Amino acid sequence: MNENNEKQISRRKFLTVLGGGAVATAALSACNFTGSKNDEKIFDKTDVPTDKMTYRTNHNTGDKVSLLGYGCMRWPMKTNANGEEEIDQEIVNQLVDYAIEHGVNYFDTAPVYLRGGSEAATGIALSRHPRDKYFIATKSSRSNTLESGIAMYHKSMEDLRVDYIDYYLLHNVGRSIEDFETRFIKNGLLDFLMKEREAGRIRNLGWSFHGIAEGFDHVLNLDIHWDFCMIQLNYQDWKYATGMNVNAEYLYGELAKRHIPTVIMEPLLGGRLGRVPVQALTIMKSVNPDDSAAKWAFRYAGTQGNVLTVLSGMVYMEHLQENIRTCSPLKPLNDEEYKTLEKVTEILVDDEYIQCTECQYCMPCPYGIDIPGIFTHYNRCIAERNIPKDSQDENYRKARRAFLIGYDRSVPKLRQANHCIHCGQCVPKCPQRINIPEEMYKIDQFVEQLKMDGKL
Image 1 (cartoon, one colour):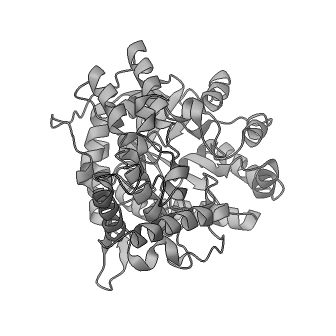
Image 2 (tube, rainbow, N blue to C red):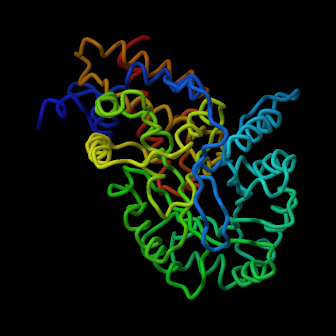
């Protein structure tokens, strides 16, 4: 084991080796990551071009689709007069206006996003623009009957304020063949949607993949013309997909062979590829000193020729501007840059992150646990790798204090892991197949051990 590896610690050790031997704790600077717009340390301050966006042509319809797509899973939130959290429609309007002005024309939402509020907020913002200025994508999700599927479809049109949908997806496909058959075949829902495509009310019919290779192959090989498909693709998942995910190299290759336009989700792997460890960032900066880690990841996803658009959930204007610059126009990766990302990937796969992408499908937790918030704090602390090996390390007390204070600041105490009762209701909802109760238990045990080690 080389010197660098000796300074690192796996997630398993981070959570289980406590006291006496090697005690793992969190990164100092990472623990103060707030998830705010200020967490991206370096933004390009140059003007944002309005006329240089890269577009890809959908050969099925001739659509000229912006390479940067707007993922509407997360919108800015605010607290209303009743103390309740709600979507900040004014800010949503501003972000959508700016995106369209700068060439973004693909907007992806779903009935389940933001606990049912995303489609309506997106519809309000987009309906203020001419209909030919944007493509809207939404999904059929969590419906097992024909009646509920049709009702969801019509509700999407109502909330989005449209009389046709440009890109409609069968959502969360691939868990198993039986699941797909139950949700879309046996109940006749897919037949209904194909008729809607024939009538022109759905212009492109496709599906989003979250599952196993067998499920992917089954749907792909049906005697159905698929207009597009959405997969998770980034430079780590290309060959090192974890958990129940499938390597993107295989998924993308199968779609490209069939000339099925590919929509990309998770180009930043839940944000983790935008905040890579310092060792990885140093390698990147040695090649492109001015480029952020996020820019590297977006360029990787966009370089693939069969990609129609790359989705990003841009809550802050700075993030939107950064991604527009990256795609206006896109500069494809060269051989040296591919080799650089191979080195970066070798560093990333050494750590065992909790593979949470912050999609919030697990929410709301019936017992109030902030599941994504807890995992986000943990992953951000792991990312820095500035981890003392044991309680005798001279930086241990400082790092321990930073982890615990950062935990309390980012996750309210009543929503922390120690309140999880392991009911398991969240487990089947997770696209990443995370055993959420088990991870909650491990994190809670780790936090309790840190608290026992001394006063803050």
